[in-house]
Structure formats: C-alpha cells, structure tokens
Image 1 (tube, one colour):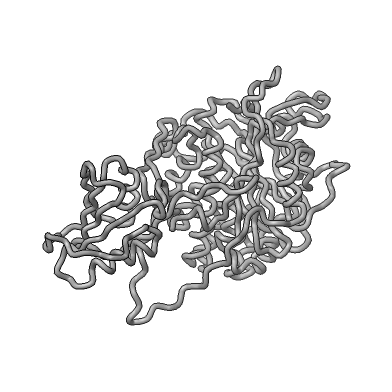
Image 2 (cartoon, rainbow, N blue to C red):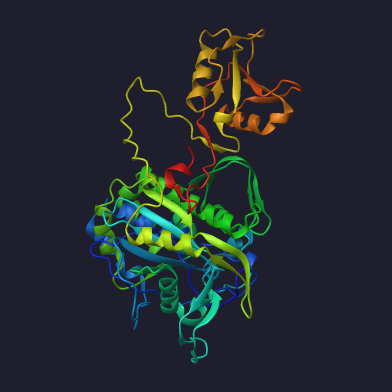
Length: 511
C-alpha cells in the first residue's frame, strides 16, 4: 500500500516546547523500499519519546535533565524555507519515525518478526499540537499513502532539480529529507510546523520496558502472522517487543493502515497514562534511564532540547490521558490512482480544512472530560484497589442480567447486582436466591444467540463459568458463587466521534 523509498526517519513523541515555540530541525530520510508488511509502523512512538520525557521532566532535577541534552542528534529541516504559513496559537510538532532494526539483536529480530535489512524510511507521520496553555495535546495521523504534491526542490539522491509533482506523502522524505517533508505538510495543512522530531523503534522498545510495560485492552482476539501479534480478548501488559508488534500490525483486522493508526493512538494514550500514574518519572535515577533510552535515537531541531522540555512540563503538571485527543485526517477517496505513483489516499478537502483550522485556532478536536482527582492515601479500612478493567465488544448498557445468590452468604446477590449495575449492565435490581446454595464458582448462563454479550459479561466477572442454555432469551442469568470477589469495570470500545472521528485519551485506555 505504501510507496517504497529508501530514506530515513519516522517518529514518536508527544511533546513540548516551552517558551514561544520556534520551528527547528531533524535529519533527512526516505520512505521504505522493502516489503511493506515487514516494516515497523511508528506513529505512537511520538508518545513514547517526547511525551514520556515531557511529562516526566518536571519532576527531576535540572542538572539531571540538561545533562541528557547532548544525546539528541541535530538537524535543520527549516533551512532556507520561505513563504511559510502564518504561525498558530500553541505549538505544532511534526513527528516521523525511522526503522532501526540494524541496532537490535538477531534474537529480537527473529522473535518480533523484524527480518530483512533496515529501510531507513518514513512510514507514519503525525502532527502533534500542544495548546498555548499547555493543558491539551491533539494528535492527528497523516496516512503515509496520502496524495501529495511536493514543491519544486533538489532531489537528494540525484542532485537534480525537480519541478512540482504528485507523490505519496512518505516519498517527500526520500526525495528531499525533513525539509521537503515539512514544506509538503505545511502546503497540505496550512499549518506552520514549529518543531520536527524523529526516533527509531529500538528506543521505543527500550522505553516501554523501562517504564515497566504498557497495558492494552482489546475487545476481540487480535492475530497478525506478519508481525507475530497474538492477543486474546481482554487486558494485556505489553513489554517493548510486544508493544512493537501491536503498533506495527496491519493484518489484525480488516482495517489495514487505518486500524493500525488507531492502535498507535490508543497505545500512545496508554503510555501517557502509565508515565503519569506510576511515579517512575519522578525518580531521578529512573528518569535518567528512561530519558537516555529515548534520546539515544532522537533527532530534533536545535531549538528543541531537554531544556525546552523542562520549561514545557512545568506547565503540564496536571496532564492526563483526558488532556489528549486523537484522530486521523478526514479521508475522501481511498484507492485514488495516480500515474507513476500508484494507489493513493485523498483527503476530504472540506473536512480537512476545518480540522486544521481548529488546530490553527488552538481549539480542541473533541470535548475533554475534567481530569480525575488524585487518589487519596490508603487508610486502614480502605478497600483494596479494583483490578484493571477491560474493553468489551458489546456495551454493558446493552446487556440484561438477572442475578442469583448461589451461596448462604447474606447480601452476596445484592453486591453482585450493585457491582454489575455500577459498571453499566442492565440488571433487574432484584437479586434472587438460587435453588443451589453451594455454588463454589460463579456461573453465567446465556442463550447461544447472545454469545458476544455473554463474553462481555464474563470479563466483568473474572473466573466465572460460561454455560450456554438454548431458549434462555436475551436476559443473562448470573449465579454468584463463593469465589466472587468484585465486579471488574468494563466498557465498550470507544467509537470515534464527530466529523473528524476523534477520541480522547481517557476513553481509549483500559477502564
């Protein structure tokens, strides 16, 4: 689907620029030139990189952070650029990613299906808009196969001058490096790019491992023989290599690149939650470890360094997944054939213009929920924290349940009914006593015609037994057993909303 090129970078990071943002640089590269399915996909690394750094930098000493600045590679993607768009409110960061399989071990290549030579190519491109108040981040994915027209430029490979011509967006990097990529994106979006970042996927893997893995929820099994991804429905803690498989996969469902970009965005939201909730980045030693793994592969313009990140994060102390929104540029025509280029994706010009105008005006792409209050210190009588929830295929609000108490414990049926109702299930509100009061294991009986609903209910009652009963009807029957501990919160996978298919980070992380 993508055009092959041999160039470099692609990137991840979600972040910050302190004081008045100014555009800067990154190094050149080129789009892929190998079998597409083997290449890593990197939108989310944007988060991994700077987002993690940015969110954590404010909690450690100035000396610890500034000492890391020398690890950032420098490039100038804004060299000799003229007639650029007017600056926006807030800060616009263009993120691209690069291969980097030449830096990992043969064992890792085999385990995570990363065979072949590195392509040094751009594959995923994102615009990250940080609001002027530093209280919101909007992430817009730009499909690498987007129809684009690169302006007149000097081809980096041949040294020859080339007139304006059509390409797939990722080819801009192969022909003219970061500078041509910036010029092309600015021409397509009308947005002035303030900073440019690139990171390779080896630092992504290391960073995920350093923060202790990232939790992902999926409503249905996901399997991709190209990347080796194999996840059952439910909640999973992914290490760096597994996270790499998750964000690379294009064959886990029928949505190809669009589904892959959505998974990258979901992963980014989950990474932000992990980085802001476990305190690891407030530990100077741990922060140095995370930052070193990130910055070892980062390239950025001269104006975007660790010092700037510190200033940026000082104003983002309350940043949470609910502070972020994610979308893909609205698409108009898929499979738009261009002679000499191949099959491209055309944007919906009207909706895309409206989207980028919102970014220019520093407006959110979706309503943002207020951040949840910080958890209070545990007391002696406090209940232990509930187990992490799951994303389910059928929304709890669509599932009817009658609860029975299958034990001699008074009030157990009411506890189960209340717990299921609290997470959204349509219980009758009138639990009953079972004819069998010696149930050791909680039982869910369901009509086979409603098997998907039964699976959603089972995720809310971990360890329960599922038993099909023909003719039972649409109402599930739950008989609480002695093994019952608590109802695990679940919710349906958030569907993109509005003209731009936007979701906020708090609605795509695990419940």
